[in-house]
Length: 249
Image (cartoon, rainbow, N blue to C red; front, top):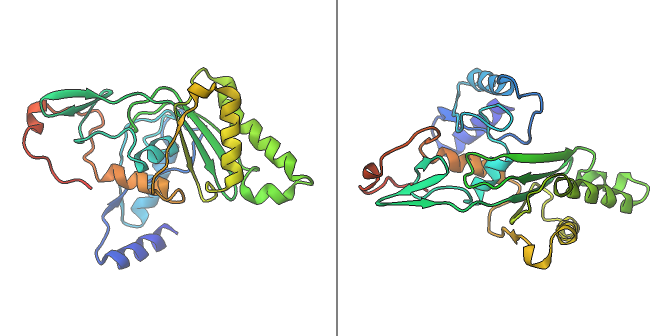
């Protein structure tokens, strides 16, 4: 599959692709010790002649991989610095030190074959996110008709959407929906209803609405990371940024 994707992309672009980044679809709970998934990714890339571009050095799961809480944020241009230098939780600019505001994100990924919801602790940068993910592979959109009563399906969905709000103290300040079924109006309305049940009117989070295609948001986020120089665990003096910056898209 990977070889086919690379071949098709190279044909479209008209040149060889030497390296690529990867956005994972969800966490591997067994990855807290070592880097088993990252090792498999590197091996798979090497087999098709690709070098794996490592964006981050360490994730919440112990792996140097991008997960939805990273890539979805980046796809929507959230938690990214302008210009592109990162130092701890700060963004550095010529002659000043501007700090990105912290947000608690509530992310709902609705797919044909899965539903996941992620609540983050207060987060400034898309590079470094502490997530609290909950996923159910029996609550994808294709399971709606598999229940004797569809209302039972939606009650199970409501329970999953409520779980991070019940288990953690963070109150979401921002909502992002993604996945190939994220435009489903019933899912959107249920998500809003869950938030209204847990948060007062003045505490209701902002919904991220832009032109980013939610189906490809993960891949677009990985692409956004790779367009930037890798500043993880790196710092540059502000003086180095005083000259006109390189052009980044």
